Length: 148
Image (cartoon, rainbow, N blue to C red; front, top):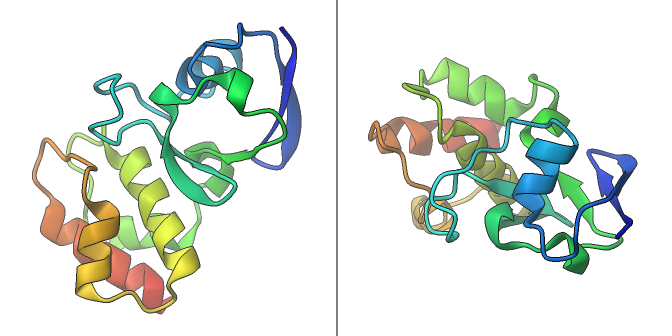
Protein backbone atom coordinates (compact mmCIF):
# COMPACT_ATOMS: atom_id res chain seq x y z
CA UNK A 1 0.00 0.00 0.00
CA UNK A 2 1.47 3.36 -1.00
CA UNK A 3 1.15 6.00 1.72
CA UNK A 4 2.55 9.49 1.28
CA UNK A 5 3.79 11.42 4.30
CA UNK A 6 5.69 14.63 4.64
CA UNK A 7 8.76 13.65 6.66
CA UNK A 8 11.12 16.41 7.72
CA UNK A 9 9.59 18.67 5.08
CA UNK A 10 9.96 16.21 2.19
CA UNK A 11 7.16 14.10 0.71
CA UNK A 12 7.98 10.42 1.04
CA UNK A 13 5.97 7.51 -0.30
CA UNK A 14 6.03 4.43 1.87
CA UNK A 15 5.22 0.98 0.55
CA UNK A 16 4.51 -0.45 3.99
CA UNK A 17 1.34 -2.27 4.92
CA UNK A 18 -1.23 0.01 6.58
CA UNK A 19 -0.74 -1.58 10.00
CA UNK A 20 3.04 -1.15 10.05
CA UNK A 21 4.04 1.13 12.94
CA UNK A 22 5.50 4.44 11.79
CA UNK A 23 8.66 3.63 13.77
CA UNK A 24 9.44 0.62 11.56
CA UNK A 25 8.58 2.44 8.34
CA UNK A 26 11.01 5.21 9.33
CA UNK A 27 13.79 2.86 10.40
CA UNK A 28 13.42 -0.03 7.94
CA UNK A 29 12.01 1.55 4.82
CA UNK A 30 13.53 5.04 4.97
CA UNK A 31 16.71 4.14 6.90
CA UNK A 32 16.07 6.94 9.41
CA UNK A 33 17.49 5.28 12.49
CA UNK A 34 17.58 8.26 14.86
CA UNK A 35 14.15 7.31 16.19
CA UNK A 36 14.71 4.40 18.56
CA UNK A 37 12.77 1.30 19.53
CA UNK A 38 12.48 0.98 23.27
CA UNK A 39 9.46 -0.86 24.60
CA UNK A 40 7.06 -1.18 21.67
CA UNK A 41 4.04 -0.22 23.78
CA UNK A 42 4.35 3.62 23.85
CA UNK A 43 5.57 3.70 27.46
CA UNK A 44 9.24 4.67 27.30
CA UNK A 45 9.34 7.56 24.81
CA UNK A 46 12.41 6.43 22.83
CA UNK A 47 10.36 6.41 19.62
CA UNK A 48 8.89 9.92 20.01
CA UNK A 49 8.49 11.96 16.84
CA UNK A 50 6.43 15.04 16.07
CA UNK A 51 3.24 14.49 14.09
CA UNK A 52 1.75 17.81 13.02
CA UNK A 53 3.75 19.38 15.87
CA UNK A 54 2.55 16.97 18.59
CA UNK A 55 4.94 14.62 20.37
CA UNK A 56 3.72 11.10 19.60
CA UNK A 57 5.03 7.58 20.11
CA UNK A 58 5.77 6.21 16.66
CA UNK A 59 5.81 2.57 17.79
CA UNK A 60 2.03 2.67 18.11
CA UNK A 61 1.11 4.79 15.06
CA UNK A 62 0.04 2.70 12.06
CA UNK A 63 1.29 4.32 8.86
CA UNK A 64 -2.14 3.74 7.34
CA UNK A 65 -3.51 6.34 9.77
CA UNK A 66 -0.79 8.87 8.92
CA UNK A 67 -1.71 9.85 5.36
CA UNK A 68 -1.02 13.55 4.82
CA UNK A 69 0.59 14.01 8.22
CA UNK A 70 3.68 16.16 8.72
CA UNK A 71 6.21 14.05 10.61
CA UNK A 72 9.39 15.46 12.11
CA UNK A 73 12.10 13.10 13.30
CA UNK A 74 15.35 13.82 15.12
CA UNK A 75 17.05 13.93 11.70
CA UNK A 76 14.75 16.80 10.76
CA UNK A 77 16.22 19.01 13.48
CA UNK A 78 19.51 19.08 11.60
CA UNK A 79 21.83 18.73 14.59
CA UNK A 80 21.88 22.43 15.40
CA UNK A 81 18.44 23.01 16.91
CA UNK A 82 18.40 25.06 20.12
CA UNK A 83 17.20 22.03 22.08
CA UNK A 84 20.11 19.96 20.78
CA UNK A 85 22.50 22.77 21.67
CA UNK A 86 21.04 22.95 25.19
CA UNK A 87 21.42 19.17 25.53
CA UNK A 88 25.13 19.48 24.77
CA UNK A 89 25.59 22.54 26.99
CA UNK A 90 24.00 20.70 29.94
CA UNK A 91 25.88 17.46 29.26
CA UNK A 92 22.61 15.52 29.16
CA UNK A 93 23.48 12.40 27.15
CA UNK A 94 24.98 9.43 28.90
CA UNK A 95 24.27 6.29 26.87
CA UNK A 96 22.23 8.42 24.47
CA UNK A 97 19.59 5.84 23.65
CA UNK A 98 16.58 7.83 24.86
CA UNK A 99 17.85 11.19 23.73
CA UNK A 100 16.09 11.51 20.37
CA UNK A 101 12.73 10.89 22.04
CA UNK A 102 13.57 13.24 24.91
CA UNK A 103 14.63 15.97 22.49
CA UNK A 104 11.51 15.62 20.35
CA UNK A 105 9.28 15.91 23.43
CA UNK A 106 11.20 19.02 24.50
CA UNK A 107 10.86 20.57 21.03
CA UNK A 108 7.09 20.02 21.11
CA UNK A 109 6.89 21.64 24.55
CA UNK A 110 8.89 24.79 23.82
CA UNK A 111 7.13 25.24 20.49
CA UNK A 112 3.84 25.52 22.37
CA UNK A 113 5.08 27.17 25.54
CA UNK A 114 7.78 29.77 25.08
CA UNK A 115 8.44 29.97 28.83
CA UNK A 116 7.38 26.65 30.34
CA UNK A 117 7.12 26.38 34.09
CA UNK A 118 8.89 23.64 36.03
CA UNK A 119 5.57 21.81 36.34
CA UNK A 120 4.93 22.06 32.58
CA UNK A 121 8.41 20.71 31.83
CA UNK A 122 7.89 17.82 34.24
CA UNK A 123 4.49 17.03 32.73
CA UNK A 124 5.69 17.25 29.11
CA UNK A 125 8.73 15.06 29.75
CA UNK A 126 6.84 12.53 31.89
CA UNK A 127 6.85 9.14 30.23
CA UNK A 128 10.22 9.67 28.57
CA UNK A 129 12.35 7.20 30.44
CA UNK A 130 16.08 7.78 30.83
CA UNK A 131 17.88 4.64 31.95
CA UNK A 132 20.87 6.74 33.00
CA UNK A 133 18.76 9.04 35.20
CA UNK A 134 19.81 12.39 33.75
CA UNK A 135 16.41 13.94 34.53
CA UNK A 136 17.84 17.00 36.33
CA UNK A 137 20.07 17.78 33.35
CA UNK A 138 17.18 17.19 30.93
CA UNK A 139 15.06 19.64 32.93
CA UNK A 140 17.86 22.24 32.90
CA UNK A 141 18.38 21.78 29.16
CA UNK A 142 14.68 22.33 28.43
CA UNK A 143 14.82 25.56 30.46
CA UNK A 144 17.93 26.71 28.60
CA UNK A 145 16.41 25.89 25.21
CA UNK A 146 13.27 27.81 26.08
CA UNK A 147 15.40 30.87 26.90
CA UNK A 148 17.33 30.68 23.61
